[in-house]
Image 1: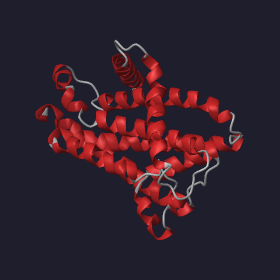
Image 2: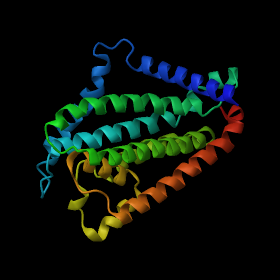
Image 3: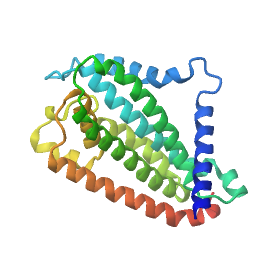
Length: 255
């Protein structure tokens, strides 16, 4: 049992390392793209949306940068993990190993990028004076929920995409709508109260609010919002794990 667990982690880290090296191979700026992409997105989106916002959001560019870091990790992981089994068909045909390692290595490599960019982001945040020791539980909770939900949903879409290749196209399409259905470029406090129930079906909502509260002192998610988001998150994650476990037995037949 101990040897199999050790072997699993060795394989996972080996494939994660491969992902990390492949991403910045032959690039000039390398890991500087960790913060370059979200900074460019922040400047462009922030410049445009400030003209349309009726109520200004305090520390808006910081607010926006946090949302983009979280979203980029989530969307990139889901986009790359969904078709990964199909793309690695030659590896699957050659050797037997836990199939979950393939999508998990993608998520882990993206999470390392997210964590490094987040640490760099702490430098300017320190000058705002919005951090305190009391924010640590919120940061830990937000990070844990983000990783859990991303993993569960990625396993779900990855497993279904092996049999139904339309899933990959559906994920790419829905992410465009999902971005604007999440409080990234706007604050949830700006939305009509009678429509807030819609955001209770989007787990990214509470994850973003927890990060925004911890780092900028923005309002934390209310009990109803947090409870409903966690419930949806747990259902999707559990479903993803179960579906991947069942479907992975027949991956060889479909790829």
